[in-house]
Length: 249
Image (cartoon, rainbow, N blue to C red; front, side):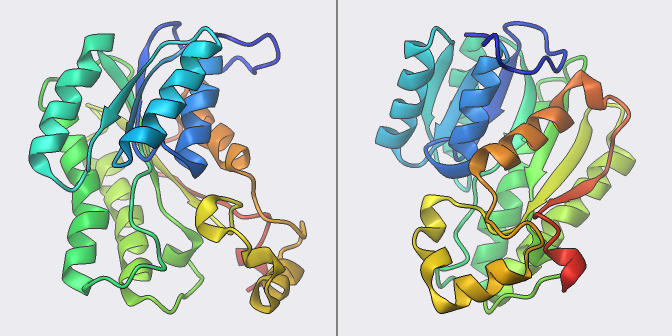
């Protein structure tokens, strides 16, 4: 499915990338763009219908993908999901994108288990089979875990913890995997549908130097660069992708 218009990031054709939360938004964009770069995609999501649609779209464009309905917070589903994903080949790259929305009312401790513990489970399950050569991962954090506070305590805390966990991996497991994270600002995904048109949304947009929300592709291409051999010496970075929002806070 490699597109003539797609940038060439140096991935080996047919290498497998596992993308969680691939049924919509940023995860879907990562899955589609990864396939354009010639990667085989193991697309995971709790929503079986949505992730099947992502995989079907990749296949319709000549790419290779498998849809894996799985909840990353459930150990048994993670184990089964990796078994299914490895039917594509060795999983060389991991995108930890799945996580609960900040709009959901969650118990703090349970939210930390779901949002942060699930990423640790994904990494440990993946690497327990042996780290593949050239392994890389990108975790999705947020500007809410760097400088911007939100009304949800668990969301700020979990995103900060993801940034810290990424730095831990980079410092102590770099012999197995190269680890980075992105911290998106406001992104035009289904979770924020209509927000830009609200009074609060307009005020936020006024404070973003680029005066727009990110597109899912803005985030996806950044994540794919960090995964790629072009970023071979980038390790432990938590990269804001926010149009300059945080530097104006």
